[in-house]
Length: 614
Image (cartoon, rainbow, N blue to C red; front, side, top):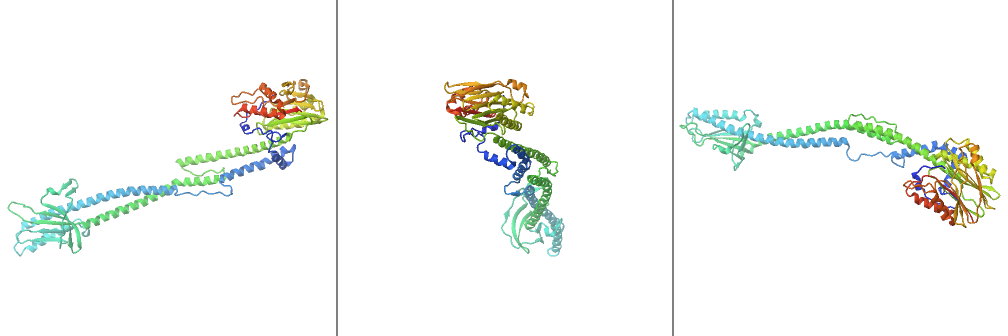
C-alpha cells in the first residue's frame, strides 16, 4: 500500500462535502477556473498539461518578475517614488557639530583669555603707576636735593628738568596714544622756591574718590596688599581735562625723609593712569579674540566640510547604488570604496544584492513550479468525476482531498452498460507531478479496458497492468480496488491489485465484512506474476447494505504523537455510521479522522467511494 508524506498545507484544507452532492471536495469553487485555464492553454484532454506547461515560462516567470520589480519600486501606480531626505544630511550635521563644538570651546577659551588679559593689563597698569610714582618721587627728590633754589632765578630751570624726566618716563616703552600714564604731578609742599610741576592732562576739577581693590598682582611675587604701605594711596576718580571728563586710577606716593637732616613736608608725586586707555587695550584684545574665534570657526568648518565630503561621498555613492538596485537591477554592484565601516557596508551591500539576486531567481523558479503545480492540480481535478452518477436503486457518494497540490489518488465511476457500473479507487506510489501523470495514464487505460471486459474485474486489472508495467518508471506502482456492480441483481464482482480491503456493511445484521482479494500492485510485473496473484470474488449487496472503497489515508492518519488512526478503528466507524447512508459514512469517518489528527498535518491523500443499496 502506498504511503504519503506529511504536508503542512493540508491543515488549511477542510472537508466541504455536502455542499454539492456528487462533486469531490477540493474541486468545489474551482471547476470554473479550471475550465477557463484549460481552455486558455489549448483545449481540455491530453493536450491541456502540455499547453499549460508551455505557457508557464512566458506567463508565470514574467509575471513574477514584474511583481517583484513592482514591489521593489515601492508603488502600485508605476514609477519609482524617490525618497527625499528629511532634515539635514550627515555632511551638514557633521559641519554644524564641529563648528558648534569649536565655537563653544573658543568662546570659553576666549572668555578665559579676555578675563586673564584684562586682569593682567589692569595689574600691569596699576603696577606701572605705582612704580612710576616711586620713580618720579625719587627723581623729584634727587633733583631738589642737588640744587639750592633761589627765590626766582632757578625754579623754572629746575621745573623744566623735572618735566623732562617725567615726560620721558610717561611715554617710555609705549606709543603715546596708548600710554597708560595720563599725568604726573609733583607737589613741592614747603620746599622753598618750588610749589609743583606736572606733565600730561592736568585736572581742572576732581570728583569724589572711589576706593579700589588694594591688592596688586605682581608677576613673580604674587599678590601685594597696598594698605601695608603708608606712603601709597590708590583710588579711582573722574577728572575734567582738555580731552573731556575721563576716569583714572590715581596713585599718590609721599616723598619721605631721605636723611634725618632733610625734610620735605607735604611733598608727593601723583600719577594718573587713564582707564579709557585700558578699555581701548581691552577692546583690542576682545576684537583680536573674536576675530580669532571667527577665523578658527571658519577654518574648522572648511576642514569639517572636507572631512564630511570625504566621509559622506562613499555613503552617497552607496545610496545611489541602492536606488539602482531598488529599481530591479540586482546585477549592479556598488562602487563605494573606503577602508572604514562604510567600506565594510559596501561589501555587505554587494553580498546582499548577490543574495537577493539568488533569492529572486529561486523565487521565480518557485513561483513557476507553484504555477505548474496549480495547473496540474486543475487538470487532475478535471480527470475526476465532475458529479455523482445516477445509479438506479443505489446511493453513491465520494470524497477526495489531496495532501499536496497534486496527488496520486484516483477514483472513478465507469458506466459499462446494461445496468453494470464499475467503481475503482487507486493509489499511485509516486508524489507530485510524476504520481499525478501515472494516475492520469491509469485512469485512461482503466476506462478503455473496463468497457472491454465489463463484468470481469480481474481481467480488467490484468490488462491494465500489462499496458502500464512497460511504461511506468522503476520504483513506482499503483494499488487499486475495482468492483463491478450489477444493479439489477445486486451482484458485486471485485478484484484487488494490492489495495486495502473493501468494507461491506450489512444492514440487517448491523455488522461489517471485509473483502480483500489477493493481488499485487500494478507495475511490479509485466504479466505472469501479476496475473497469477489476482483473484476475483463475487458477493450480493442487499437492501440497506453498502460497501466502501478507500485509500490508506484514512486508517493511517497520524496525530501529533505520530499515532495512526488504525484499520480496526476505521472499520468500526464505518459500522457505526452505516445506518446513516453513503454520505453519512463519509462525513462521520472524515470527522473522526480529522479530530484524531488534531493540529497535525494531513499525511496522505484521502479518497473514498461509498455505495448503498436503497
